[in-house]
Amino acid sequence: MKTIHVQTELPTTADAVWQAMQHAASFLYVTRGLFGFPALAGRTAPCREGEQGTGWIWLFHLIPFSRHTIHLVEVDHATQTLRSRENGGILQAWNHTLHVEPAGHHRCRYSDTVDIDAGPLTGIVALTAAWIYRYRQRRWQKLVRKHLLPTGPRYTHPAAT
Image (cartoon, rainbow, N blue to C red; front, side, top):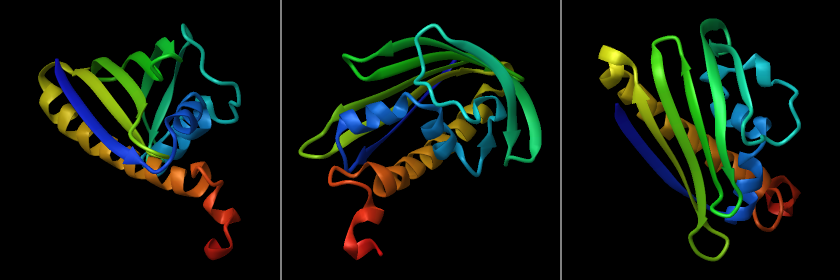
């Protein structure tokens, strides 16, 4: 088992990010360009603890990569933490913790921690996962700038047009 931890500061409140974290649309946004998850397309309900689903991961939205199972084992509103237990393809375990916490006035710290077991390929999968999570966190920065700023979405500000 190998653990990867990546975090970033976002220029908005932890509450705003927490609300976004609970929706498939945010997940699809931050993985866009790398992966497609057709099973989540059109979903509008927030995630619920205990949910489980299996679907195809599409690499670069074009290549069916593997069937992946996600079990959402914890949605903790008090600590603003989501935990999933996942597996599929070469992944025997992909245990993911997403967490957000306040980090000052209109700032928060968002983190991804994942425990990975891919048998003999764990090392290479962990390196790839670190790159994927850095990409996802850059996409979180973009999502916040476009839609979750404390003063409203950037596109509503006169200077943004």
